[in-house]
Length: 414
Image 1: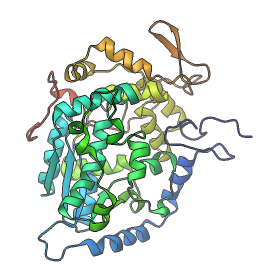
Image 2: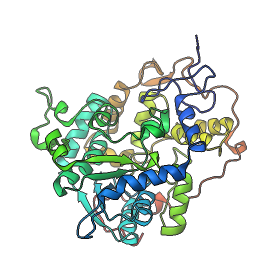
Image 3: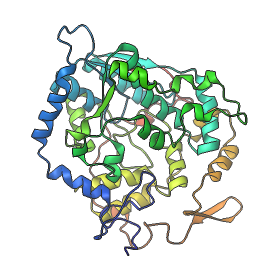
């Protein structure tokens, strides 16, 4: 029987929250599915995408061909570029306001809609409701980001039903990219089930309501997924570009920097300067919680991706992970002020969700890793020896450091 717990190529373990398996050679399912990127005929797959979207084009040009969810970070510039300039579609952009916005994220979102000349619809949920839900999901799920994930994944579907635009185009499928949950050739589409099980940690909006909590109908109704009858009446479907385009976030971001002036940012907790630059919390407080719950941080996701693309060796990746994953949070004070809680109370909640397979309390308030839980232990090179200089920051997240989040903004200039 195979006793290995970690992939011999990348840094993921069999305890990955999305589910991951190792084959007889000790290579994980995520690495195996990534191999398809070098064997599939992407010209043929692009033709399949063109044929798929062709029936959705509105010949009159007087309405939208598709819905595209976007943010001020991640892959949004590349997705809109592909949809509008390569596929020739007229997209309606939609975005959910997380309220944790950075000035750079506001700027990038404005840059996106201006450079591509697209209409955009923004969902601004009552901030008091967002705070109420965040308090609940922090206590129950150990997640401060549940409202963001719920809003980002449902607003596009709600808009598709409301405007009767059936086609939604997403970027890459997280389960495919990270753990090889599917093959590219399965051409999986966005589903309510995947959203609930993985994005929302098994909790739909109505599941949060309880006689033991203060949440009400007024707090959760905007996060409800449309019912099956409404979806069927419009014919809503959500496809992933990553099934038809060879997905490489680093290369794609650098192309968007050159062509459209997308701007990145530096982080303490990862070496990637392109992802999640729109949010103060994703690569900060949220990432710290992930580290406590799962024993690894976002830098491991970035490192595994770069190993698979051949830009990092496993040893270089280990050095980067060891350097970044336990860096202190920089914006905890903003989150405490926004949520209206004391930092010590928040730390207490965090500790309630520490994974006992990973963490051991050795004294009141003092924790260490469980023996054998830290795959980064052992002889790994120092960061200075890693020789990895693959990412550049084209703007600094710290250029503006307001005392609170940027709730709304036009975005120009930074």
